[in-house]
Length: 406
Image (cartoon, rainbow, N blue to C red; front, top):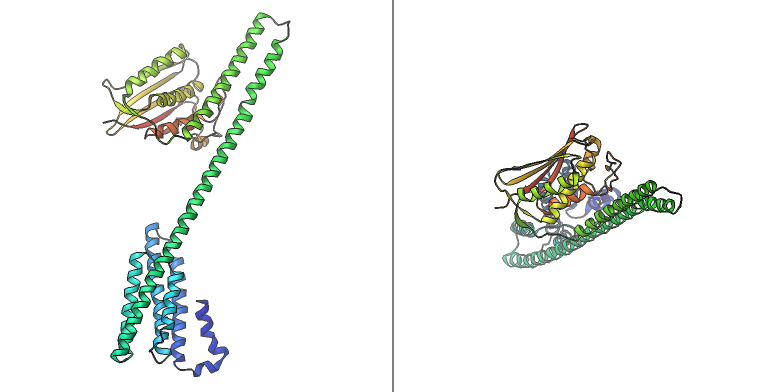
């Protein structure tokens, strides 16, 4: 548009140019290019930013194809009319095709359509140029060679740009992956530095106190219990970090068809033994077996994380329930507690790794912010999904959806 606009202004600056043959037509062609360019830009701004993705792509292809054909047609007009003698004067026509091949990107069918339209326009111009049959055939043959060259040049440029675009996308994806790994590394180092430092400091302090000889047996036992609790806390943090590191390297996990009810019965018995009556744990499931494709070890980890979370926020003698429901294509597992609930503002980040939603339990239990992130990762490896519903001071329910095994 800038070049054509400059050409339009040249006769104003140099009036002698108005005396050249076909100057009026030449000016008209350049004015048309300026108007066409302005229209294309306005249409792009009006349509492409206001339509859906599929519509934007279709409009972009149509606009590029139309403007490419208009540009070639103008070059063709300059070739046959402004130069008076069409014989061996295909320079502008060739230049227009080469310019479009280098600057426009057309897909396979679009390139063929542009070649067909250009060939038709060339034939019409030849017809109205009143050339002798020999000159018409010669020009058609030259045009055919030029169009074939244009087609292959256009495909070469398209392939080059497509390859370059794919390489850029791959580099961008690798860069994002490296940034993600770097961020994960920083997060893990932060957890190690912050969460592990506290229990080790406690162990160091309590050990120093135990070295004093004037402690009563009761005080010694109390300090030993605190040291044991700090060791268990550190072990839990390390185990969570190991699970995260292991699961990041696993794309698929081995699954087997198992009775979900039987698996949960085993989980129920284990947790009843651990709770020793401090919480009421109920299990409700269909009277008949329901089957899912499970990895037993990882599914136990899911239930352990959810139940330990429920225990952490449920008062003593509160009720925790596990419920299994059978749908048409899916199985639903619900873990419900009567705890303090989850504030609405932290629910959107609840399943984030090293989530800022982590809170101390009712007994002061610490959290790494990894448990629910691990749950989501493991559930997704089973082909399922997990979400939460909660109301403050009334309780929380975690919903797990798993594909039913057939």
